[in-house]
Image 1 (cartoon, rainbow, N blue to C red):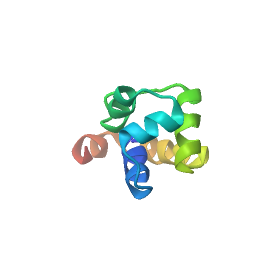
Image 2 (cartoon, rainbow, N blue to C red; image 1 turned 90 degrees about the horizontal axis):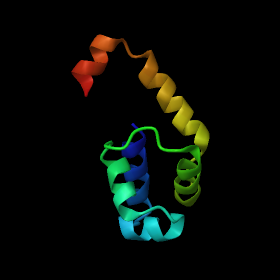
Image 3 (cartoon, helix red, strand yellow; image 1 turned 120 degrees about the vertical axis):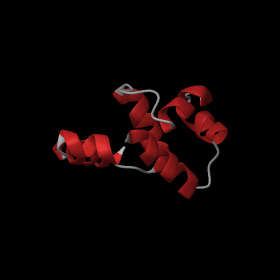
Length: 80
């Protein structure tokens, strides 16, 4: 999920949620919701801001969504 990708990359870069919030202009609470996969379907503008700061290509999001959508429904329920 997008939240897992964001959290992993943020930690790789050594950023706190507060630092990411300051650099992106996205609230800390919103980022927290995203990272915990509690906020689905963020706007592309928000995603672009976050990915720019984290040096993540937008194509990685599309690739991840393709993989998830290709998993049969039964496997999705068992793996999450």
